[in-house]
Image (cartoon, rainbow, N blue to C red; front, side, top):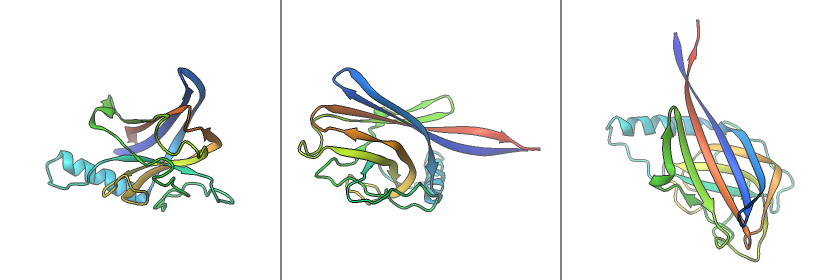
Length: 175
């Protein structure tokens, strides 16, 4: 008997100019509401008429947090999503969503001129938001979340951050 399995990975690449100064790859956690949202996405492909909108990637900082909780399947938000004045969520454009074999890949880039140049920050978590998500933080369904350990410092005046989120769809064979 076959069953269906989804797992996610996220890759962060921090560049200063053309030089890569840090790379990070880790499995992410898909939330309970995220699984439901991904199922809705399948219905869209089947012509159900369900509309769930644009996909965004948001970043969280450690500003004011004594500790950052580990991701949980019941999470509804990042620990401390960055406000629009620092760096807003980034929409995943249609051209930055690709299907590669059994992998759905979402990719965004946070450029040097995005956000408040006076506020460098430490990235501690990130998430994919869908189903009612907008550029405004704390909107939509948190589909998946990843904890960034060790933290990623990003200077908005000179650092470019590329985020590549990958969902892998597999068959899990059971007997």
